[in-house]
Amino acid sequence: MTMRIDITDVHRRYGDVEALAGLDLTVDSGDAYGLVGTNGAGKSTLFGLIAGHDRPDDGRITVGGRDVRETGWRIRESIGVLPENPGFPPGETGRETLAFHADVRGIGSGPGDAAERIAGAAATVGLADAIDRPIGGYSKGMRRRLGLAAALLANPAVLLLDEPTAGLDPNGVAALREILTRVRDETGVTLLMATHALREAERVCDRVGVLDDGRLVAEGRPDDLATGHDDGLEGAFVS
Ligand code: ATP
Image (cartoon, rainbow, N blue to C red):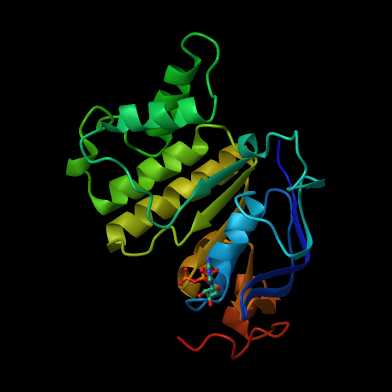
């Protein structure tokens, strides 16, 4: 099951700051979309709204055609989130942490079900061998992959990734990129990824958009950027 994300004229204000100022954005079902923007452009705010942790002041966000504010829809079953810095207790093992996440999300009512999903998610992110070791001994890349495993536990139709490769060394970046590409190919999940790095977005994403001051100021295919035949992207990336 895959789902399309539609964001229509969304506003979110914090006092005088308009974090999102009439954002329009569509991610087609099964697509990977990279949202590029500077600090404070509004990416985290947007993710909180899509995941239903926060509400827009105006506008509408639908996932799979349903408003994310609708009550009674167990949206958390359809949307997986990888926060920028997942905080994990260092004394716990990877398995214990995933079991906690499965429990919180009500995954695995049948006997053995949660355990199977945990083992499956750990294998998907390449942590099968490390799963019974304390997280305190994990590298930053391993912790990020554990966060991805937690997001995958619910077999999400939509995956929101906030700066998934930020602060990782080149090996960690390559490993995460390979996992995301594989997960996408195998599950058809719709992927929305926030990043500062255009090159990273280019490699994984079908479309790239530039968020600035809470609005989409440019959008196109990654190769539009490379060729310069773009629909407004040229010159949008300075770094
Ligand atoms: P970063 O990459 O640094 O996380 P971002 O693109 O995710 O940046 P947001 O965190 O969404 O940006 O913030 C957008 C704007 O809204 C910023 O000006 C920020 O200071 C402001 N903002 C976000 N959350 C709050 C809040 N809870 N209270 C007040 N202002 C906020």
